[in-house]
Length: 113
Length: 112
Image (cartoon, rainbow over all chains, first blue to last red; front, side, top):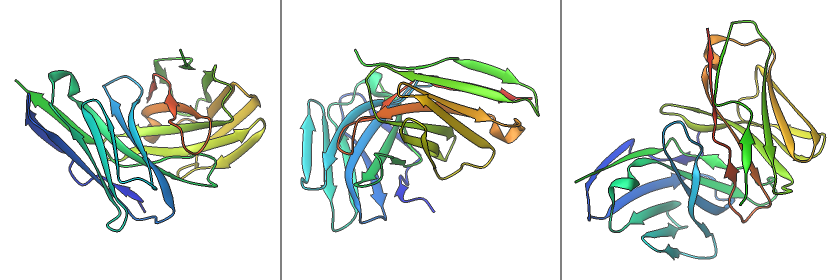
């Protein structure tokens, strides 16, 4: 049973606009959340993370929002650029789990000119 | 510059072969992981290790085993490769609970 869910398999957005990617989780013990970006034939690269004690974290064009009561987080990319076209994975971990991450299925983002 | 290195980018093996996938990290991380990525399924955890010679099953361990004889090296073994093990395999390492995990470049394994 998947504990981290990304219900949108794909997203198309115009260059310069905002991309919003969503992620839901079921395990209330998750206390650390991460977003990764992945190009074909490469390993995932870390984008941004958030601890459960926060509700927002910002890093340049990337902002992650966490709503613990709804068990929902989102990634905002503003402004979107062609190089942002990739698959984005949401991941979560809980304390006392040796750092293992549970991943969502991913969202393919395509940024069009 | 931190690095996780997987021994092969692409592999083609025959059904029934024993396959070894090697991963080395240079960050002195305690925790190492093996995932496989399949379309529509995301990354699924096969096995992980939190110390030398220590290993734990992930979500899909069937048909796989692992070895961690040294802190920097974590090996994934396919005991008898089958076509349903054709996938992208990703190794990762992570220092603790509140840091990012670093991934290798991936191994695209095709079993024919």
